[in-house]
Amino acid sequence: MNNTEIQTKLSAELAQVRQRLLDMLANSDQAYHQQLLSQLKDHPPSDWLELTANNLGSEYQILIARIEKLEAALCQIDIGQYGYCCDCEEKIDDERLLADPASQRCRRCAP
Image (cartoon, rainbow, N blue to C red):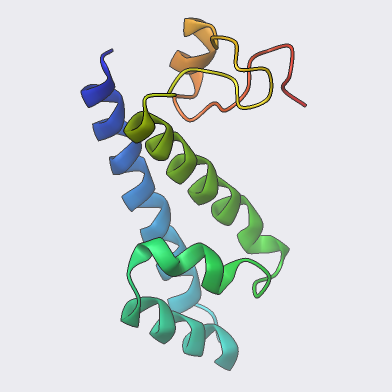
């Protein structure tokens, strides 16, 4: 897969995960979640991590972490660093990137 295809795939998944976040908030009966939903709709998606980072419970953390990882991978494509480990800067193996195109670390550095 070339970077354009990877970027398209990552962008599509990012849109899906953001929509899941909106759906979860919309289905919540907590007033704070409704208020946050309104805020998210009023801000560009690039601001969402800042708005949600420490303001949502653990049930949202998987989505927030995935958004963060997808946005980081897209930034890496933009700066020409996609496919390189963010810790040791070695090339991430193709098998790992095929399994998760948003991988940020090589097998050696992955937690």
